[in-house]
Amino acid sequence: MGKKRRMAILLSMVLVLGLCPAVQVRADNAEDYAATVYSENSFCGTEQHLTVGMYDGNDLLVGNDAISSVRVSEGYRVTLYGDSNFSGDTEVTTVNKRWISLDNKVSSIIVEYVGEHLPVTAYVDAEWSGNAQEFDLGEYDWAEINAGVGNDKITSLRIASGYQVTLYENANFKGSSIVLTGDIINLKDVSFNDKTSSLKVEAISPLDDTCIEIMGFDDETMVALLEEFAPRIWMAEGESYFASSIDWALGSLERYYDSAEGKYCLRTKETLSSPTQKLSFFYGNQESARCYAFWTKKDYNNIDLSFWQYCPYNYGKKVVGTEFGNHIGDWEHVTVRLSKFTYEGKTYVKPTFVALPYHSYINIYSWEDIDKVEDTNHVIAYCAKESHGMWKDAGNHVYLNIVITKLTDECSAGTAMDCWTILETYEFLPDALTGRGIGDTEWTSYFDCDYDNPDSNSVARWGNEGEGSAFGQPILASGPAGPEGHDTLYDRSILR
Image (cartoon, rainbow, N blue to C red; front, side, top):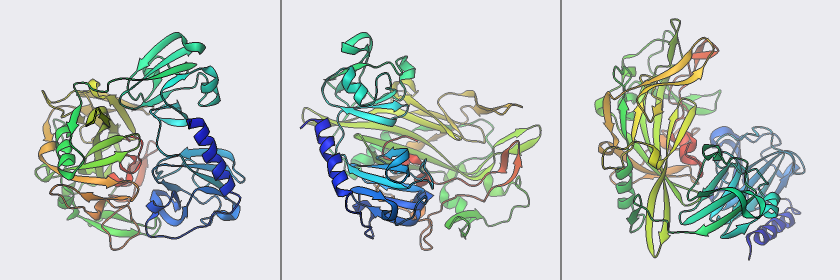
């Protein structure tokens, strides 16, 4: 059965089901349902489990204009509407969203089963977002593309290993063209954004010299791959605020219930006399530092290997003698994406992307565009002096212009963290919002998402509340979320 025909039937089934109001059913395991919506961000507050169907008006037991986050089980799609009767602004997602764009604006919802993905998906926006259309092997001319994602609208694509896509600027497979054999985040990078009027999908050999054959995905193999791709992180020359282990820092922190947030958080046991006061443990303990490595199964047959560094303190910037942007607790990471596939009866993985976040931003690089330790798969990342943003090169990196100055990260090869020697290895399970230890590592509830649970060690914020202001920025910013509070782990589709 063709994809369009199959999707039309599925949508018809949803519409039929929508004639009967969907009923909330409570359960201990939200992952047993197609989706779950929450009244607060980070999957907290009042919740409602959803099966396939249409939800309007009184069907939204969690409340009208009351939804802030949503979890979506694999194989399902949720469309959120800003108005009743399935109208108004929309937000479509097939993955968990810790904070939806239509925060506290949702008035109706459609939940659909969409099943497995076809080899190619095209999107109207960068980073695999916005309206999308899936393609199987074959040729697709102007009419089919225009009826789906839209003529001259394609900005990013997912392309499964073993497939090749040729994009054409004109209809009938004419005009300038480009051939792609893997995911592309933004067609602007290859000067073909918003130009596609026809395309072809063909099968090719997925093998190259980056592929690694594996026998399966048992714990031993997962740990071995985490070790294989763990990065070397260079702490900068002259660094003051080094990394540490969680356990080392927790001796100076306490877990408390923040009634305003309705969640447990961390704060210093010693009360700060000012937002710029420096406690002795802020300087870290590099000897105790660990790399908290997470294996996370993602959508489209991808696996993300995320390598997290913890520092007790982040020093922001000083401008005309004034500090700002500091925060207690600092989580930074390097993520390597692997594509998994089977070819001629054998299973392989191959690296495709590396993600390096810095402050509120992120750079995503193709595997071949980032340096590695000689003759290894250990990528090299540079951790900015005192503020710890991750960069692919040494030197000064301007990341924000605040009119009176340019905020700059300074990177250099000072102290090496060879993460493969200090790994704690975990698998994160996005649908369950928890995980498990693999290899010799035991799971810790520090990385669970049950922030309102007094019997857990999980925390929504790894440092004190923010205070003070300078240049429109907090002097002491609120402590950050932990690894599980970032898209990197819970979202099945992206690297953030």
